[in-house]
Amino acid sequence: MLTTAPSTDLRVTLVQTELHWHQPDANQRMLADKLTPLVNQTDLIILPEMFTTGFSMEPELLAEPEQGNTLQWMLQQAQQTGAAITGSVIVRDATGFRNRLYWVTPEGQTHHYDKRHLFRMAQEQEHYQAGSERLVVEYRGWRILPQVCYDLRFPVFSRNTGDYDLAIYIANWPESRRHAWRTLLQARAIENLSYVAGVNRVGTDGKGLAYSGDSLLVDAAGQLLLDHPVGGRFVETRTLSAEKLNNFRASFPAWQDADHFDLKL
Image 1: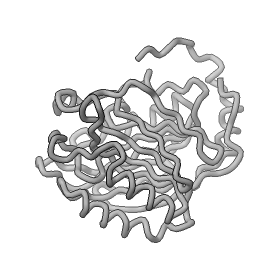
Image 2 (image 1 turned 120 degrees about the vertical axis):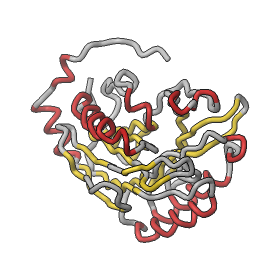
Image 3 (image 1 turned 90 degrees about the vertical axis):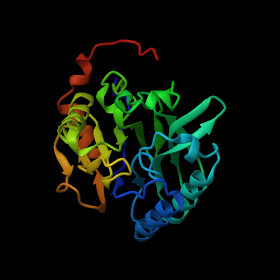
């Protein structure tokens, strides 16, 4: 049940960009330049999946320790901008390699979510360990569900049981499947009566795959609040209205008729 709701608005920034293939330092420098104008201008900054390397199946060459350089960089950027930052990076833990989404706040708090659904068409499951826990973060009065790329195709895992107001999907989603990406982002917003942000990369990666971006911000009715032409780089901020979300949920309470079930991972 949607028994609680946000009481204040939330400024969300989507960063759609090219990525330097297998060059963490270059990507950090590039992204730091993009984030500099955001100081005190937003509440949340969303980066793409594997934003330091591109979507690589060579974790043995690229993985960082759990408290590695990229996490420290994110903490520094969060403190400087005054905003939470989220994105995923290749990490090695005690059990193997993870496609790990980090969530960091200006106050130095950190959370992480390990990608649950590994993209078998790229043999991701042969190189990485799947996550086992779903994460919902409470931040500035909002409950936020962060997920990664292929997770978008699995609506049960994204099901809103009254526990979130904004779902985030970060991705390296190829241009050849852009219709599915756009359609599913809107579907997740509509069926879950929630805002949805999808942040994808652009450009061509080291394997020759092209990415069209199509980063979107969608309201609970499925209307596009942010949409850009194919392939463009941008850093843009939109304000999510708590009042509009609460009013829509009250006027169209489909959640009251939802089926009840237990999600077993």
